[in-house]
Image (tube, rainbow, N blue to C red; front, side, top):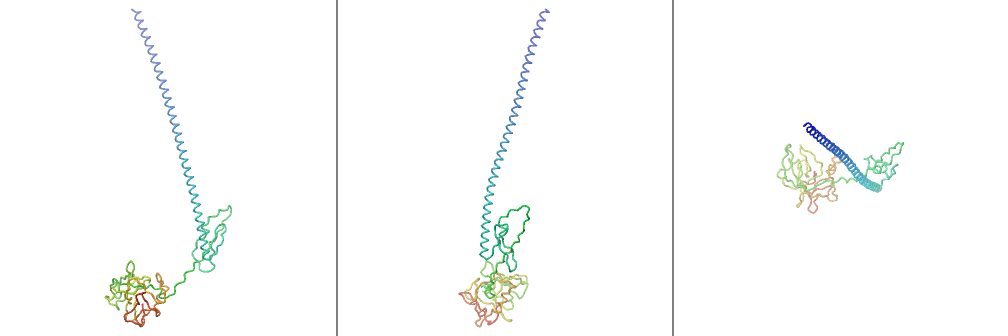
Length: 329
C-alpha cells in the first residue's frame, strides 16, 4: 500500500515538474517574442522619425529652391525696370536740353555728371529754380576719402512774360444779359439785387445802385449790357459778380439797350479794337478806370469808346434812350 502511494506521489511530482518546466519554457518564449516585438516597434519608430526628418529637409530644400527662383526672377524684373527708368531719364534729359537750347539757354557741363545744366541768368530778378539736369542724371559714384564738392544750383532765367495787351476797351468783357429776377437789396434802400442771364450755366448775381433812377418795373425782364470780368465784390453783404452799363449824368441814369435781336451771351465789340478781355480785371492795374473817361454816348445816342461804336456784330449798336454825349459807366 505504501509502495503504491509512493509511486503515485512520485508520478504526480514528475508530472508537476514536467508541466512546470513546459510552462516556464513557454513563458520564456513568449517574453522573448514580446521583447522582439518591442524592439521591432522601436526600430519602426526610429525609421518613421528618420523618414519624417528626411521629408522635412526635402520640403525645406524645395521651399528654399522656390524662394531662390522667385528672388532671381524678381531681381531680373528689377534690373529690367531700372534699365527702362534709366532710358526714360536719358530721354527726358535730352528733351529738356533740347527745349532749353531752343529757348536760347546756354548749357554748361556739370563736373562729376554726364549731363548739362542751364547757365544762370546774368540779369533780371531771381526766379524759382528750374529743373536742372544734374537732378535727372544718375548720381556719380562717391570717391573714397574725398570730400564731395557742393555744386551751386544754377537759377534758370525767368521766361519773359507775354507782352500785356494795350489798355483799351478790348480788355473789358462786355456781353448782352437779361434780367430774369430783380428786387430791392434787403439791407440797402438805394440798391437793386438782380439775377442776370449772361448766356452761362447759371445767372449772375448783380447789385446795382439804380433805385433812384430806374423804376423797378423797367428793370424786370429787360436786356442790358453787362461787364462780366470785374473782380467780384461784396456790396452790403451780397457779392456782385458783374456791372450793368449805363449812360449817366449826376441827375439822370439810363440803362444801355442792346440792339434788336440780341440774346443773352452775345458779345459786345468795339470797332477798331480787338476783343481780348482779361479773365478777371486786376484792380491794381485800373484797366476800367483808364477806359472809363473815353466811354461815352455820341450825338446819335450810340455808346462809343473814343468815338468808335460799341456793337453786337450783325445785329446793331448799343444805345441809350435820350442821353447824348454823356459818360458810360
